[in-house]
Length: 354
Length: 274
Image 1: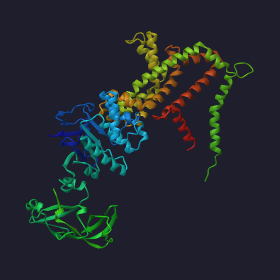
Image 2 (image 1 turned 30 degrees about the horizontal axis):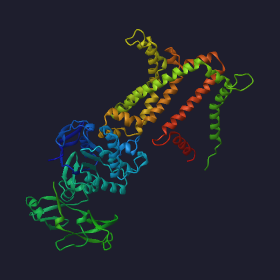
Image 3 (image 1 turned 90 degrees about the horizontal axis):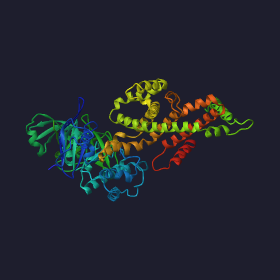
Image 4 (image 1 turned 45 degrees about the horizontal axis):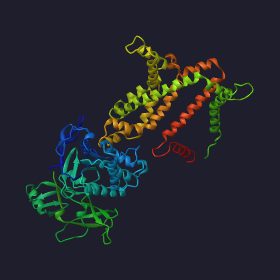
């Protein structure tokens, strides 16, 4: 049974529909991310769950209780904000204890819980500091401890890592996931960063124009995108217009390729139709990796050094295709302007749904 | 190329002379009460006067009351306008500026007509009622300064997110205002309070027309009857204002967890030696 259930959630601002008939069920202890570009409605859904925005229609239930019209301060939902939102007039310890004081706990309980939370975020030595005396990463840790201290039923994280620099962002991302697992709390994480969403989540809801285009595990979303939008938004994708030949083969980039077994049923009904096929940059290689590999030819435009990865851009019949290689000693680096064959396994071929 | 400094220096000297020469002359005059010698006799005379002390006492109490009433009125209003009614901000700002446009004499005659003996709420019939009317008048006169100070203070902090953070922790709206918003605009309120105090303490028109024994009418009376004491009062008022300005700066630049005075001195030192 789902712990949090969003049913037919719609939010309109005037004539602008920001969230359109959104449905979602989340299990207890699950970590789910809303992933999408700016304006896709992910933060609006989060704000409706928190109680800061009222849905135009639809319902929100937590643990069987309808909270659609419950004020935010009665929902017992913790929230971490992008801008930290620590109370500047209070010390770290006072910030963490704020929710506990409102709940009416006695002083000894509050002191013990604050100490426990500060230990959890590894800032137990900074309880007496004020927010302005902390770094961005430390402030966000305190915000997390403050949200968790009153033992909320649900934890909402609204782009909590966006304001941090790259290293701190990765460290805090891992910490958030560890703490969430340790406490077993159900969490919704909003982000526009696909790497963040894929690395941290049990499931990802990819949002587009107020709807969830796909809800699935990170592997499902990345390897089997349900829509064009998901395919293009999550990871890099090389796409080709392909013609279906008799259901067992497709023709693109001037060559005919046998369709993988899993696609044959779908393609059987689409003879002579034009479909969009796609290959991830890491599915392509400048070397043949096994005998079943298919190949397409092109001309190297440039090779970009990206640290652990090298990205080559190849022109194939006027279309630029990206391929990624690990930065290894034996990596082949073709000079720009040379002709090259790109190899791929037909199993890696994706047919994008219309 | 380095520009010659003579002209700017001359302008600064002239401006300083324009401001300081009358002040020095007044101060010098205030010390000449005793023939042939410079002394603080005029100041002593002012402080020994019961009328001075009672006028100062009355105006100080009325000013503090105006500060309290102003803060209670302005902080929730400015907060609510910023949080829920941002479209009304321009209108509310305009309304808060009206006391600068409408002369105090017009305001006080309006009050007398509205709250006079023949009105539904005849505040002027009793001393306490008139005092209350005077305090309300001070609140209105200082509204442009109080509202602007508080509104600027609210602009510095992200009140929407702070409010939401507090509410997600179970806080009611009133508790949020009292424990989160109010302490974070404290320096702005104090700035507004000092300005309110400066305006109210020596206010003449309302205090005089409502016939209250305030400091403003006292100064005018002393100016008519005596020679050296008004000069001493002027210097004291000037020192008073400067004292408040310094206190305002100290409170405004204060951060939680640091003592008020060193924070202020540090910021001064930074300004002098960047």
